Each structure stands twice: as C-alpha cells, then as structure tokens.
Length: 209
Image (cartoon, rainbow, N blue to C red; front, side):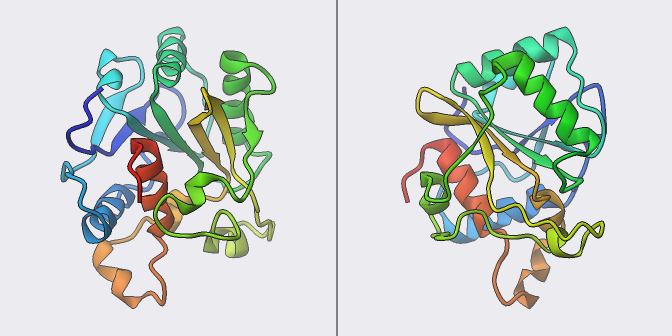
C-alpha cells in the first residue's frame, strides 16, 4: 500500500448509492491540511471495490443509504484488504440501526468476518484521542438530533478488529452528511465538527499525535 501521501479513497460498489456526501472529502482534506503536517493528495480518489487498485490505499471510505450487496469479487477484495492491514471507514447515511443500509452492510460483515466480529468499541478507545481528545466517545451529529424524527443518539461506534487494530470502523451517526459542506464555511461554526474525521484518518494511517 502507498503510504507516502494520504489519499482519501472512496469505495465504489455495484449495489446501492456509494456516491454520497460529495463535498465531505475536500472538507476533511482541508482539516488535515490545517491541523497536521502529513502530505496529502488534494482530491479524493474513486476506487472500485472489485479492482486491484484498492490495495494501493491504506484508507477507504464507504457509505450509502441503500442496499449493500457485494459481488463475489468485491467480497473477496474487502476481506483481503482488511486482513492485509487496510482501514475502511463505513458510515450509514440513514443514521439508524435498522434501515436497509445498516441491515445489509452488517449482514455482509457477518458473512465475511463472522457473526460476532462487528462489535461496539469502548468510548475510551485510542481512536478518540489519536489527535484531538473526545472524552465522551464519538461526537454527536445534528442529524441524530434533527433527522428523520427518531431522536436517536448513538453513543458508540462499532468496529471489526484485526490483530488488535481496527480494520473496519462502522458508524450509524451520519458523519458524512455532517461534514458535507464547503470547507470555507467552517469559520461560521463555534467548533469545527470535522475534528473527529482527523482522528479517524490519523488512527488509520498509524500516525501518532
């Protein structure tokens, strides 16, 4: 895998709507530029999950609202990528725990890694202090509070851990939509809400704060 520069790689899968939150990657890349010194590619890279190009990138993002049903090659690549040290940040744009994306993605993970592989991670996990400090665990999103009327705040994230390190980080909090705005508008926020995105990426890259 290429580690000289960080590339925000988005996974394109055949089922569902993978092309969500189109301004989010540039917003996160801007935050990495503001807060860190790691070298960056300036634009996101779209990577087909079925392609061998996947194995060039140590970090990938996967999201959607709809069905997640991997093809045979997509499934093989996903499992191999994670076992080889890759990191996938998966975000459910429906911000629920019983929608189509959540149910179908969790089924895929169960099929690939076993029914108990995807587990809640404690709110004192190292990902919450890999750069910025989040003492209460994953920060809440506005979509959880004002979304589809469920008023459901998820106070945890789930993960698949390989060799004592997260390989798949799974969120029902809809961070992708939370961070889907022009990075120049961050100056209007009382607190930059993309900081946790920086934590995720630095943890994935194995960069110490």
